[in-house]
Structures are given as structure tokens and as C-alpha cells.
Image 1 (cartoon, rainbow over the protein chains, first blue to last red):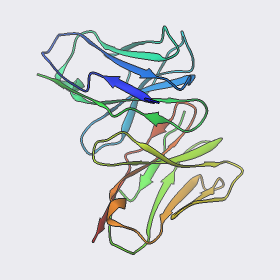
Image 2: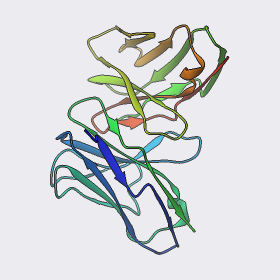
Image 3: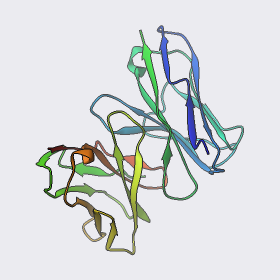
Image 4: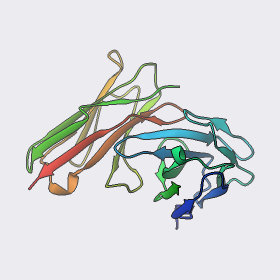
Length: 110
Length: 107
């Protein structure tokens, strides 16, 4: 049972490049979340989804887009990366209550 | 939506001592959850307490919830060096987190 898997785990981008982070869960969870965590800080919610085909904005949605075309996958896209988006990104899923987290994706934008 | 705020920001204790950290929130909740994060890893769920519960135990963890004060506390008893981590509370359907409490347990 893999749980929550994030790919890629590391990525370096140049300013203006685009990329997509993939989150996959095999627990049939309805809810999925994308967070970012900057050094010494807590997690800030970017976007979340309460089910297949639905998405909603969190605290810091600007510069990011998401899609939930399949229940098991939640994609986070950066259309034009900026240095301010250098961070560690965490995906999480839940059925109702407890969140299960991936191990994180470290993104550096130069 | 709402966000938990942890207090203190950092806590340093000796092995064997108890550690207490607090969480405050602003609006009514269905439940409140506590998580632990080891050094940049993904968060791990510790315990969930529902709004109609006042106290809950799990091993060396004790969580209390006071809905009248909109606050919760996490007590770790007989702490170990392995408890060194950051601890976060989270509430709300959109599961927002505070900045966390950084706990250091010295051997």
C-alpha cells in the first residue's frame, strides 16, 4: 500500500518555466490538498479538492493551478515559475478527518 | 475557514520531562487534529479530538479541548530525544495549519 506518492521529489526550474507536480493516492480518499512549506514555517494551503472534478482555493492560490480529473490524482501546476515559489510542496489526502501526507517535493526556482 | 495557532513557537526540555504545547482557533469546529513533523518530512497524524470530547489519550500523548476558550493542548509525558520534532494543530474542512511548535528534547 503506497499511500500518498508525490513526483518529482526534487526539481530545479528557471524563472518563467512551467511544471506540474503529481500527487497520487491509492486509498480511495475523497479529499486532497496541496500545501507549501517555507523554512521555519508551517504549512500554507494552496488548493484543495473535496472530490473528483472539484477544486477550491486555499490561503495562497496565486500563481498555481490544480486539476482533479481522476479521484486518485491531484495535479499542481506552475504556469510561470517565480523565485518566490521556491519551497517544499506537500500533498495530503483524507477520507474524513486524518490527513495522510506525501514525503514532499522540493522545488527551487532560479 | 480557520487556522490553528500554536504556542509556544519553540520549547526545549530535558529527556524525561513533560512537554505541553497549545493551540488556539477562532471559530467553531467539528474536530481538531495534532500532527508531528520530523525535519522536513511529511506530517504524521497523532490524534484527533472531536468537539464533543474534552480529553483524549494515546500512549504518552494527552490532548484536551476547551471549546469555550477555543483552545487545545497537547501534552507529551516522559519525553524522549526521539520526540524532537515540530508539532502542528489543524482545524476546519480545508485543514489549515499554524506555524507549529518546535520541540527539542535534550538527552
